[in-house]
Figure 1 (cartoon, rainbow, N blue to C red):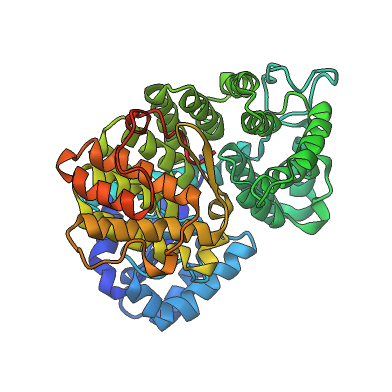
Figure 2: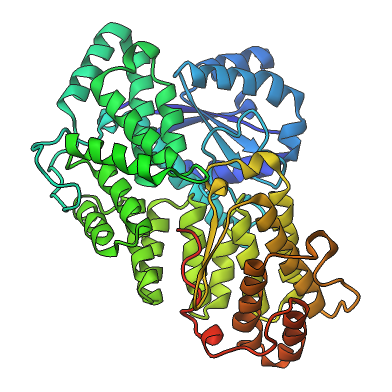
Length: 520
């Protein structure tokens, strides 16, 4: 039997009612003996409160930060409790977990680097059904408790059993993912470094492993950076770092695919049955339009690991590119189930629903996505399709705010180009200027469609848009205004005229398959 983990709740007293609601949702974990919750209302008479808080914080295994504007404004929460919590987290003595209660500017805080709950970052108490969000927090905490109490979380992919496999075939994955070398490493670490080193290594490897399965190579590298320096050259860890580094290079702008392909072939030759490398090769072949090879590799990974989110995502792209939008949505949904915090997976799911004409459900998915401006741009299209032009303008303005945030634009997902497929060509928006111009045109179009006749179109900030962006918006108007909202066709036709594009929509522009996945 494992002793229950001590959970310290740091919160502003303005959120006390929400803290009590969360405690109710965590009562099942307490009743099962998995956790013991402590907060400052547990201090009994006769105890000095600051000393009691310090003692509880020093002995905590998990520190929950209940995030709101009041939390950010609390000197004690930030200067005392948060400082000590981060110190203990960095020393591998505790896990810090922010819980986003209410909207606030927390993304630039000291704790923004920690994975937050709920996984999608949507504030708990502002949701339509807050209890559902509290349940998501409880499930997330249950997963963390399982990770912290399970020594098996140090597993990773295995060493190859053969060295002659071709990287363009789909070799079967090995039956057991535990590396012998890694097992020896864990044993050696536990013996030499004691429990603290074992906890640090276990936690870091678990985070890196999970990040690789959802193609978050930046997160994997950050997790590996927390491994003690004297352990980082161990072969198993060095191999994991090499894979994560290779994956991170695919998110450079633009990626050097020739160099990436060369290094990928070398690593695949050394570890032909490695699932992470198979996924990287599937990504490579997908971008080379060798869909058969990409599909075979992703399917091989899923035969051994049904929770590999990136494999489901790649199969969704494969179905999308072949015109099978409904099948693609099923695969994107499985990717989201496996990695609900990924904006990329959820955005493609929402886009698929949009293409299928399921506008309400598409909007629900878009609203769950944060810090991903493309999702807001496409959310506006869903509003267009439902005749909600002012809501569309609001979504575009939010996208423009994100695009103007220098810190946000350099984050992992937002460094990628926006890719679009029109009936006869593909369009890539790589530069921040082009992305902003597309959003500006969309926002101005939404306002004109909402009846604001005085709004300039094209807007002054993008009064001479490139042809590719004009073609893209003209296609959007055909597909998401003319087709679902025929009473607004005249207004949409006027906007296309303002773009110096054909006023009438062709049949191909009305074809729901004419725009294919935008997040390759």
